Amino acid sequence: METSLGLAQPAPAGAEVYFIAPADGATVKGPVTVQFGLRKMGVAPAGVNQEGTGHHHLLIDDPTVDFAQPLPASEQIQHFGGGETETTLTLAPGKHTLQLLLGDWKHQAHQPPVMSSKITITVE
Image (cartoon, rainbow, N blue to C red; front, side, top):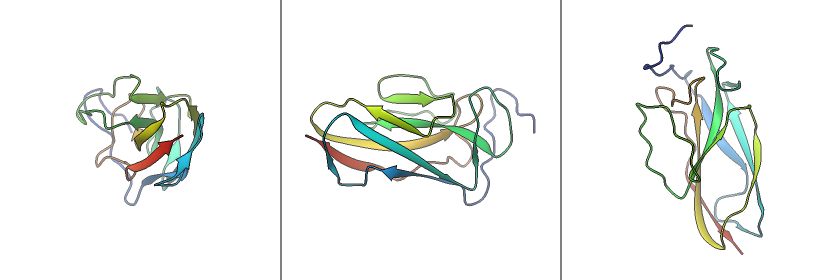
């Protein structure tokens, strides 16, 4: 399905992104290994325009996200455009929030957005 650059790709019904690890409320020692899960969609690298696929973005500590635009890359919005499903983070000691957001081939959220619940972890 061809999608122009400005329009978000549709998300399949029931699509879901979630954390395999760490668990919500976990206290962890750094560096923190984060594993991403996905249901009813496939993972494809950024730049690959294939219906029903996307790639992971990790939102750290509640960044502002404009769902009408491609996601910018920053310390708080990490891109996994190679199709990665796991990462290791170095986070400062203390409480942090993590949330996953699936992006399409052009780093834009699907419609409706495929976004995990927000989890809170404490890094020792």
